[in-house]
Image (cartoon, rainbow, N blue to C red; front, side):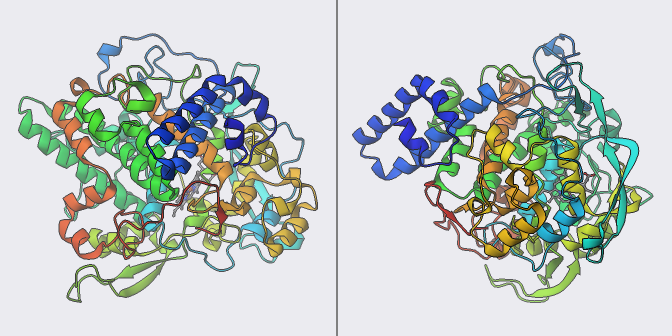
Length: 635
Ligand code: HEM
């Protein structure tokens, strides 16, 4: 049974002996089918098979793939002394105070690349010019809008950022493409690598963010950052009168992360500062004895959990729009028995039946928690950024309920970045920006869709200051994966127990792309860069990303919840307060947050059910296709 299930998917033959050993899973699948039969649920079978398959995949990868980088240096500590999230992510793992804190190593889902290809083989500028750079903007249809795009950056900045070296590298475009490169050469800092002290991976890279799902994108990731954003009154965070972020004397926003920020990103930061402050008001009403510190700490826990919940059961479901993923993500939060049973009994039946949230103990599968290099690489999705932001007029026309607001102005993305972007956002205002982003589809994750304006980008320092040297992001991203020894596409797939490609036709049906791949890589499919592969791969219908990226997503999505004691052991009323848990429980989507803070706006302008779909699309679109792995040209 299991093997026939696997034949639905693209599986490396190496997997099959492993699967054969998992007789327990065979039995589980058998019983699922039996129950389905007894209950007459055959029409749900694709979903159940899909779920069984995802469970199997997750199990295999947890057992065989996670690699710890570095040796633990933390110490035992008294968990009772740390009932809240710390500013720098320390004291979350129950026995090692360092795990998951700012400045710890990125882990790996697979060994570093064993290939001997050089850093410039083929040249990153050639790859960027011939395969990545946008020819004509390809959008994502109605599935994903610019709020969804900004949300992804909002999450990335919560979790990851590689520490840089002080040494620079220079990339000079070779003659064959120099004319087409906006920068003939550019310089950037190397990723800083450190000795790990372990034999498996001799050097590793440090994460300058806290990898926990702890809202550090608004709270900062150390004491100094936290100090900047707190108002030190009633637990609240600083916010400007217009509802947007406050700014310092240099015009840089005051928030948890300000690097490479743009208006859409800082808008989401401001929205969740508003939510944090509303939670403080609620807590103060119910617990008048709480001081500023207690209000802040509880409100932070609640806000971070809301962000994690929205990402799990709203954002991800829109990204991977299939019945199976809708079920899988809700199971991650509530368990197979669903919300009602969990509300009544809590997490008494373990991860499958009651979900990961509220488990009795955090579970790291024997590998201390971190986010991984491969995770960073599959999240390299700058192709979803458009060239322009389309602003809508929401003031000068009489709003007809659920109508589409007319276009007012188009602003270049470049003008929405950094300090300049902050000034524009302040003139535009929060509601207009939300409505505009809500109505604009984001870009599709495909080849020839990498924004040209990012090939000549003024990047930021960690403190939000503009750098002197412009960079060609498309070329730099190819270099980064190679520099960090993330395996190239075929090696990556083999490590995920997926079938590697043996010819370009295995990757895509598009002949123009096949010609371009031949031009850049010849017929050597082993050389194919991961970034190019995941943009070229045929997609499962309903998925905005490809299957190769999806396996890393699915694994890490669960790990972020199950390894964190504030989503497991400490997900209780004692830590969050009774009212705090109720607040989280009522929220099912980003729309609930918008309805709270901008009730008129969402009533007037949002037609769809999820704030992450294009707002004029139908509510509850029956767009969830069964996960038969039907490949198509979705998003
Ligand atoms: C206007 C918006 C954005 C700008 C200006 C921007 C800019 C940058 C820059 C300059 C880097 C550092 C590159 C390096 O030195 O290696 C970076 C890294 C990255 N960005 Fe973006 N980005 C934006 C939006 C996004 C979005 C929407 C996503 C997700 C889809 C994203 C995902 C990433 C990832 C995964 C990294 C790698 C982080 C690491 O190396 O640790 N970015 N971005």
